[in-house]
Image 1: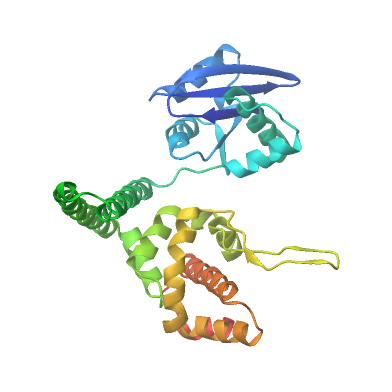
Image 2: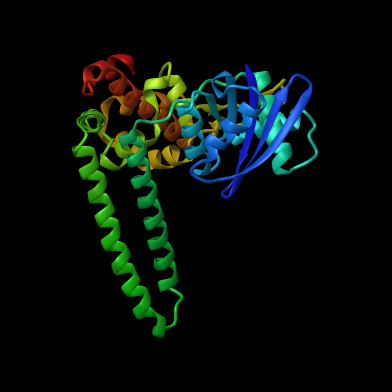
Length: 321
């Protein structure tokens, strides 16, 4: 299978095609016909896109349209964490940092590591992702205006107050759009009800997990926890280095950030998690280690109800805790 690495940016993308020991490079403008342009270029080299393994980084949202287009045209597409590419490049002692060199590193990673194939999310999930991302942006803008309110001159206060009112109204509107979107799709609605049956999980956290956790493509709860980035990271070496265990934080930042407050809530209202907390406290674990373990437990519980298609069973959770 022909291996292709693509480095994507907002207005263009660089392609590195591996043909044995040779590297073919091409730069394309990024537009709606980009996937077809790649296919046409490959056809000129007598290469079918269906015989290609294309790899790119999960960089912002730039990769999404190109990945979907190439997948629709028959290519095997892999989308990988940029940190994996960075570390792989360091292992190759790559000293350059250009779009072309990045594309080549991605191609070599694809050839040597054989990353798994990516599948585009369902249309209703893609729409939910867009709405959730928009809600995040609005909340961020509101936070900025609130911070300015404390420092602004009196003459600017009226403008800030007016902008806050507009942002509050738009946040409420987008939240309603999210609610309506989930209600209009029975599958999403059923899954949200299953997630919200877990004490400590509310509509906000469940919406984020429906948008960003591809649970149907995961082998188990441990893989889901690794995807979110709440697996423990130990720092020990020999007899002299015994660092504190911490959350790895190599995963989906959005989901990990959203878990913190629900974890604190679950520590009060979820009996299975309360048992976990008591056991860790008895073992002398620090507070933040316990919170990290609770975040990981919540991911396991959420993955469990989604995988089973059933509501949360407290007795079953207690038996496993």
